[in-house]
Amino acid sequence: MTKTIMLQGTGSDVGKTVLVAGLCRLMANRGVKVAPFKPQNMSNNAAVSDDGGEIGRAQWLQSMAARIPSSVHMNPVLLKPQSETGSQIIVQGKVAGQARGRDYQALKPRLMAAVMESFETVGAGRDLVVVEGAGSPAEINLRAGDIANMGFATRANVPVVLVGDIDRGGVIASLVGTHTILSDEDRRMISGYIINKFRGDVSLFDDGIKAVQGFTGWPCFGVVPWLKSAGRLPAEDSVVLERLARGGGKALKVAVPVLSRIANFDDLDPLAAEPEVDLVFVRAGERIPADAGLVVIPGSKATIADLSDFRAQGWDRDLQAHVRRGGRVIGICGGYQMLGDRVTDPHGIEGNVGEIEGLGLLSVETEMAPEKTVRNSQARSAIYDVALGGYEIHLGRTTGSDCARPAVIIDGRADGAVSADGQVSGTYLHGLFTSDAYRAALLKSFGIEGGGENYRQSVDRALDDVAIELEAVLDPRWLDSLMP
Image (cartoon, rainbow, N blue to C red; front, side, top):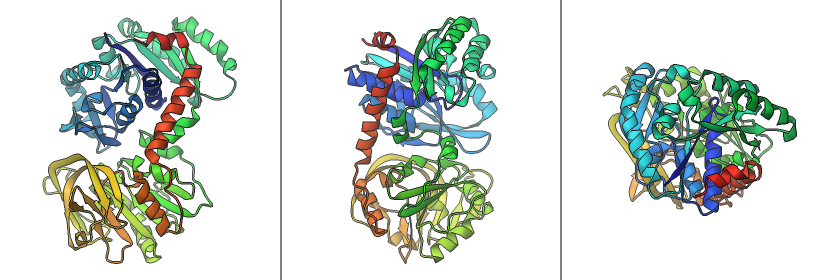
């Protein structure tokens, strides 16, 4: 029978995603047929799975760690926030509607059937499934109808390992507090815990382990240090953007306005890995740096709302000044739509605003349409004449005179637009910078030699390094218990 283990966190952003990826690679390296699974994810960082639907980018990475094709069943329910209170709901890779938070709570019990169907599909023919929870099981106000944590674990009878983040402080209290407030049924599902993101001498936490065991009876399966290799992996949640430090003194500064509903920001990761690129995320209240050579406007889950906020921040004026200085601009997906003259939404897909003026840097207009494009694509840069591989996830049709100068050719069709002076370009293709040849050509146009390292291979090596680090610190008896 397929073995299963589920990692749940004492809170959000405790490192579950990386631990699941690391365990998948560790077990794959041992010859185990392993697969990742996350019943419910909330993220605007989406990927197109190998079977053609939308899943969380984290599950795409975890499938890569497991060395198997990605599937919509690895993340059967994906919530893509569009506002402070509402999200688009993706079920088994396809749009199933929209819901506000309270309405979604009522909808969750009906989604459990899809979750269990996908769980069985993922486990078929596998030795091990490593499941990632969402948020925390301590959110007992959301326990009724839960499909993401203990609701799933109890329904599927999956043992749970609790992950606590010691770096944020209070890890003993968070573990013991979780034990205290869980119901007896939920508490019985927990087989042990892992301490994550430890810095310094691990022996200093020996008394902490004794304390946790005294209060809970749970064994510790390992104290994981701050994983250096994890920094080379794509981040799942945009919350990480708040912690990224600025660089300095590098050959090219690339500025990225952090949109309120930023999506697929891992498009920028390959640029961040370039030694001569200073990638600067411009937050609300900050100015786009005057010394930036390139501004990239990333994807957005709510183009019209983010375009309005872009103006409210004064970034439209900064961008106009940037272009007047000879700076270049690249817009990706929603960012491409913003660069045009106008965005219309006659069907009210994004809300009540039916039309908004664009940034006017490309002679194109976008009309939002109900049909959603979701596909992996092979493409070619029309600017640099090099091969590209990427994916498309977008609503809307963009047309206009600048489309006569496409930015890329996707599967034989023109996509995107380039301004007459060549300074501004936009495309619907995500994964643009992942192409080593494109990245090298782009940097060369700024007088920089770069793009030589294969980015995909560098991520793969980082997964191997994370697996090695985990194997050195996790309880070997526990790891052996996961073997077939």
